[in-house]
Image (cartoon, rainbow, N blue to C red; front, side, top):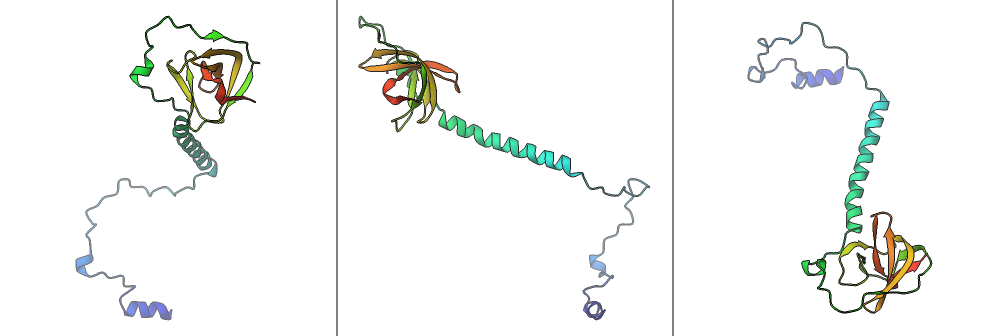
Amino acid sequence: MELRATLCEHGFMSNELPPENRIDLSSLERLSPSAPPPRERRPILPRLTATVAFLAVASVVAAVPWFFLTRTSAPTSPLKATRPPQTASPSPSPTPSLSPGTYEVAGLTTCLRVHIEPGDGEKVLDCLGAGVHVSSDGEIREAEGRQWLHIHDPIAKVDGWAAAAYLKEV
């Protein structure tokens, strides 16, 4: 009680406000004649469900840019995207097939380009980062002095040709 009396003496707990700090609320009306309902606590399950849903959406939103940054296709110039005119040069010759199976992209500092046909000048369909696993039917061709393996990327759903030197059998 002593503390309360001290505070009142110094004006800290006064019920009286100076006239300049008073606001006239007599003209305000209630929206409803009845008293407001008591505030209820929300059950924990809907709040938990909303939190889990928010975290799931946030993780997907965070993963989408990562997916596209790691799975981007190689930048192609308009000159590389178009096919050069056909000349009398021989087409890629088929060589004996390797065993069908799973291969891993390895030995690159950038990405492995997957082409529509064997050859560096062919249209690029996808660009695979190191460590990506692809499947192959085992068909291999030789073009432009290197071997090209026919592969299928199950994630990007792309079929094409990649330089066999950068693929190791898993």
